[in-house]
Image (cartoon, each protein chain N blue to C red):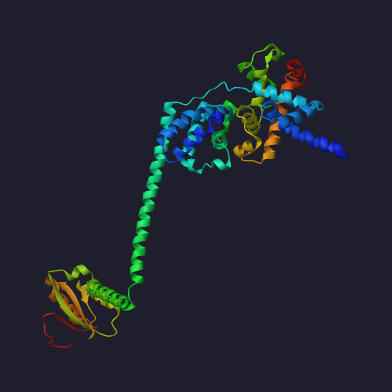
Length: 238
Length: 212
């Protein structure tokens, strides 16, 4: 275990060794310098430390490479400065714009906060009325565009627009199947135009040239109750 | 040297720079950049990297001049803190391409005697004197060889202490570490220098007798 005097000496040594670079550089106060000189008389390590510092300071290597400021280098720095300034001014203007928007909104809010509630309600009702009027004008147009066919058809749309066709009205037996109807239409080369209506009437189209033949076939089919050309008046029941 | 420029002149320039005075910035550049360059050259050992690091230092000064507070320390301490930081960042940036760094700028291990001899051969003499010649090497060359083998922190602390004359507290501010760390680094840096020079035949105890 170290004695008190040894501890004190160790502490002094540590303090002195910290001062040695400044002792060598002659930057100590006279009191500090005297303290170091006194310690050096008895401490070989610190004397060596003084030499290390002296030689280090005297022989500190100068870099073989040198660097000098130049107008070209400064011009490069100023170009960077210009970039930074441009970026910061752009940021400042954006923040100003944002601030302007916020100000506009806050002033609008401020106006509303000072508006009497009766006027606020009137404005709200007016807004609802305008919205309703707009909907009223827009909605019918939308409705018209919705297809109105609510029945399943076996014919194609093209048949409706055909010009050289004749329409035949049919009333079919209740027990007639879809297959039988399809077969009949194929045999007669007819196409279903519409039906069944609320009274169970179908309208089919056939080429005008084949309408008589088709009409004959319809009339002779066991499951056709009634068949007549569209212009015809029913004269008989089967 | 940047650390020896008159503080009053520097502070006046910094005030004008904080008001975005470009003329003051130019004056500041020609007054301080050489000191930054010399300090950074020892740290980076590559003129192109120094160009870049001085550029970064100057840009930081332009952007943050208003933050300097004379009550908190000398202007040179603040400026060297920026320079040291930018130097480290530059080293870090280029060290990412480690192969390049190792092949072109690395320092050989202490045990790599062959490489060490080659460096000594290339070293330029900095001091000439009969008492400094040991085993055919001049002390300046040997010191240069040993200094290059110190760690970056040890080199920086030696530079700041012996070349720039900063105090322990100022070095702590510049290197952003506690004062005791600086004291320890400076002590170990000196010890390491002396040990390495001893391996090459320089014994400071002997030189003590020779030079005194």
